[in-house]
Length: 181
Image (cartoon, rainbow, N blue to C red; front, side, top):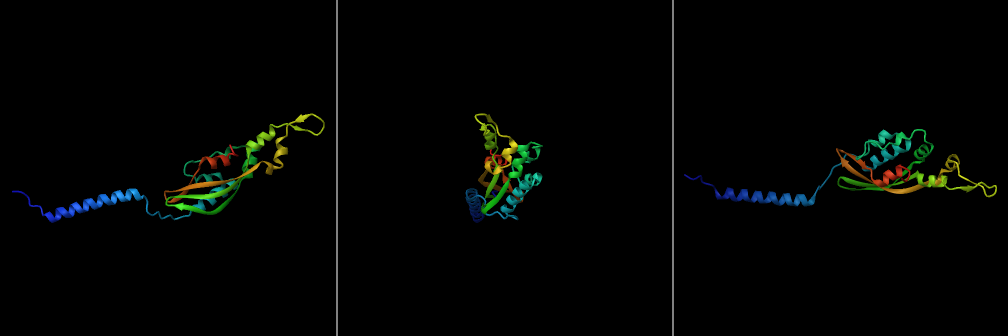
């Protein structure tokens, strides 16, 4: 005795399977349709740069997605490094551009350009008493740090990870924090 299958239920099942496959294909191509975030990416960028400028490095590192630390606190008594850290200034420009779980915030960042400073230290200057040349001293150059500062516009990328916005530290950001290196 053969079990009797109702053809109506067979067609309904087939239609549901086809509908499921179509929705899977459409959903895969559409990607994430909506992301609800509890915070704003601008707040994370503000927290990061405020912490960097004021020397609260662990608080800044907590804002990063791809690094647990950057070693900014390890400069010690190095006069150039301390001058670099004290030169930091940041201004957030416009509003962040948010696209789902990714955002970009433009930041104008000022820092001491260590390459320019080292080049000036290696360039002999006339001491004003004839043809004798001497090399400038670091203390003299750092007395006018504005001659060696650089301002860049950084496009800071953030990702929404585990319920909060995190900064993805790219080469441009890392270079600026390291004095242009």
